[in-house]
Length: 478
Image 1 (cartoon, rainbow, N blue to C red):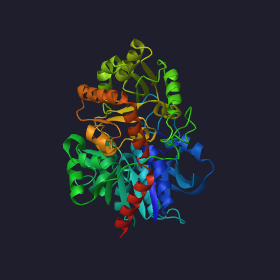
Image 2 (image 1 turned 180 degrees about the vertical axis):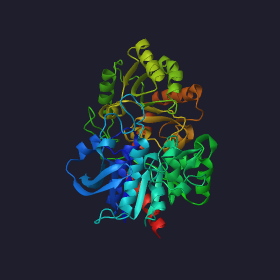
Image 3 (image 1 turned 90 degrees about the horizontal axis):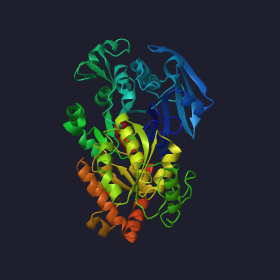
Image 4 (image 1 turned 120 degrees about the horizontal axis):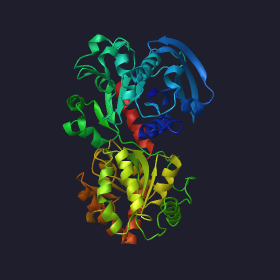
């Protein structure tokens, strides 16, 4: 089976969020299960630099300019690069400039990504042709529409990593993007008078997946559906919507092998975790004291991620003797609020703005609790990394967080299934109650250690997800 993944970022070559982690790990896991898998991605500067030597497959005149398609390999995975320097060779992120303004030609940049996926489905590479085109998020949402319009003989899967980002563009771009006029309707890719790249993926794909079972159910409801809930409910009733939980790339996230840690450890010997804790406390300007309960946040600073709730619950956390280490960037108001909390509470609150992959390992390895209090969370990877590192997750019961963390309630502690702390309502009070439960468990070191060891032993590797996707592909092809 030949599978083409279509995406806009790919760890470790280019990362802005969890999508890159998935795109970087899933193809290799599927190859390990016997599939022939390649990835299609724009030739962003970091991707070109990281990939190195490539071979030109061909050139093509398109609605977005003259394209060169090249093939290179990274860690055994074939990577197709769409090289149009005028579109992709820019500073800033893949999506916006250095001032965080979305590029005005994003409709062209990402429609071309989907167009080239369709070209590969139509045998543009004479030596390799996909049976399945698996596209990810709105950036690749037009894949299935182009494949339908051009009758390419492949099956299509579209994965929603975050329904909140929809890729909306003006209807006047229809002809420019070679989208058939008849596709611009309610039963198509039209969304309140605009072109929705996301809706194109949802409507025209043979199957839609999300990155956790709970999120697949949530997005069929108005409070999570962002206007797409009726279409998604229809897909669910047709058996064309599935939630497949993301995994953890154990080649990168494994405390016994992690060279980014100050000291490595495993579930059988957790003593070295204290070395990482002391490093973290020093690095973040916290009082170095192993008896203090260290809470950590590694996140985009947004309302979606529930970081305002952390601010609300912070006074009680600090009053109980806890510490907070935060790594992240985002909303300016939240950034300033956390910086002010650090200034007002020296030795108890440490804040580092921005995102640094290496330091995120040191935070998760050194903290005692990793907080993910999201208002919604399609899957979440941070809590999975916390579990793997014996850093107990404190999460809200939503999306993938609900699927992966079991609360330290008495009955769960008794039967050995507890792995973290879960709260229900998106309020500071509900979060505060979970924080208090964390302090109670912390006061019982033997119980805390048992929960750590159980959490570290849960299998969230990519093998299970890879097999589930391959089973889905086989069903579509039959």
